[in-house]
Length: 242
Image (cartoon, rainbow, N blue to C red; front, side, top):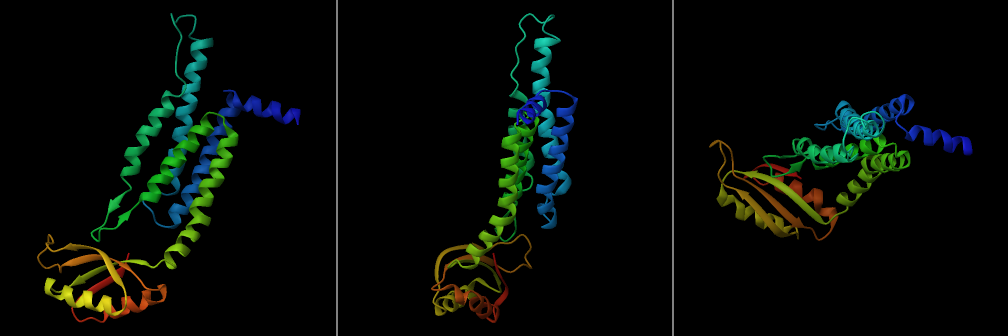
């Protein structure tokens, strides 16, 4: 046990073995997290996550290197050797926001996509900082939690959404005058409407008016029946659950 503790303490120092281990861990952990995003065809995937995690680890080690060299190497020539090891890490946290924002889009159907990918990039960057700092315990726990969130909790999220009595649907129809018949069809199924977002004016005149309608269902079993009933309405051109 003592030998293991000595080995870990050695790997916390900044040497060739610890640098190699930290960068290898960044590639492995970042790649495994990004692999799930890659399989789901998300904007940021396998290589993106590797580069984010690897770059964060490198930035953190660079801060440690600066502090070490000011004390041991450059300290003799510096009047007041002083540095903040965390300043590179702080810039990583700030900078990753711009990259994450690029993965978030709002579709033409008023649906926000990319939030999970953006959050995953930010979490991967933080994990890379922990790796670069040699905080292996935090890295291991963080890695397991991120993988669990992307895989196990994704199934839980799907289960909750499937069994929810709240339903958001996207509709395209011929004319605004047809909206009354659509609302009547929804109420006939026993659902109540609590929010409607109507897009009357589209950039292309050939496009039909559309709406995103948020519903509260009396029971989840009518979810499919409601979509089928709306699809069979003559004035409805497109119906899709969001």
